[in-house]
Image 1: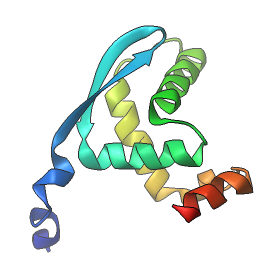
Image 2: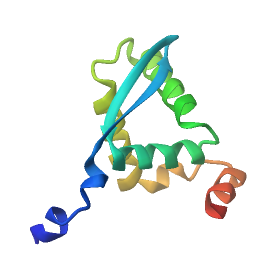
Image 3: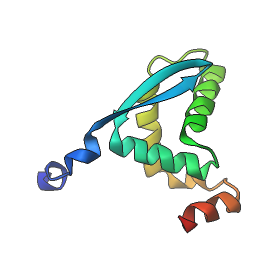
Length: 103
């Protein structure tokens, strides 16, 4: 059973840092490569670049909760939510979904 998990390509869990601008401040976010792949996919489905998606998400979380204690953890959980609940993306306009399917 563990062979499925243990046999992963190490590149999928290698840490990658990306520079982004959140709330007007330049910062970097360090996540595993697989999480970046998922965030890139989510951003495309939203019709945004990944940096724009991250900035928008950050701003929305601040608006809803007033603070963000751990944005990288929020991003990881957002990826899990995206994978476990694909129906949450069903509200997107067809044009965005068609663009994603064409890639």
